[in-house]
Amino acid sequence: MGVLENIVPGELYDANYDPDIIKLRKEAKIKLHKYNTLSPVEETEKNKVIKELLGSCGENFIIEPPFFCDYGSNIHIGNNFYSNHNLIILDGAKVLIGDNVCIAPNVGIYTAGHPIDVNRRVQGLEYAIPVTIGDNVWIGGGVSVIPGVNIGKNSVIAAGSVVIRDIPEGVVAAGNPCRVIRKITESDDQITNFKK
Image 1 (cartoon, rainbow, N blue to C red):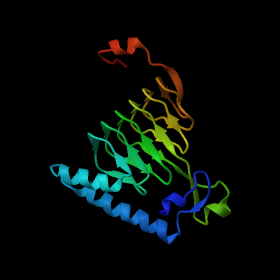
Image 2 (image 1 turned 30 degrees about the horizontal axis):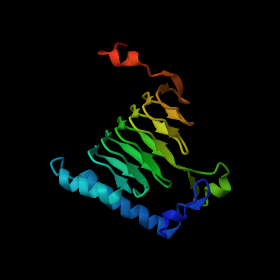
Image 3 (image 1 turned 90 degrees about the vertical axis):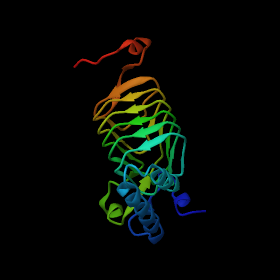
């Protein structure tokens, strides 16, 4: 069993000083550095690096550089995945992303958190809780997804939202903290242009 399998969701572990964990993060950073500096024309090599980094990925994915994560091996993306620039995934726990997910620029998906009390925090302790994003989800620019959140399939998270609790399927959600604004309906299929 690898080091990351020893991290129990919700329980504290030593993220800052455990040499095995530091080694795994460094290995991921080496791959990320290579990925983020490859020429845009080197698509085959870029795809190879991402497949080596991530736990699993489906067919037809685009991750616009720069992309950052802690380990990579806890990230699982489905088919037809697209993320724009500056995606950050802190994957101390699993991050499961479904099919047909689109992520706008400057999004952060965080499984990692730190104790509130200073004594445990300065010891380098943290916890990690999995995040799940369902099929057909669209996440707007600048969104933060906090540890333990599940976003239901077919939902839209508006730009700038901070998602601190689960979002059901088939809704538009927005705000800080993010909350459901309305259900997505058949009339949304009729919209052909957007007005402010």
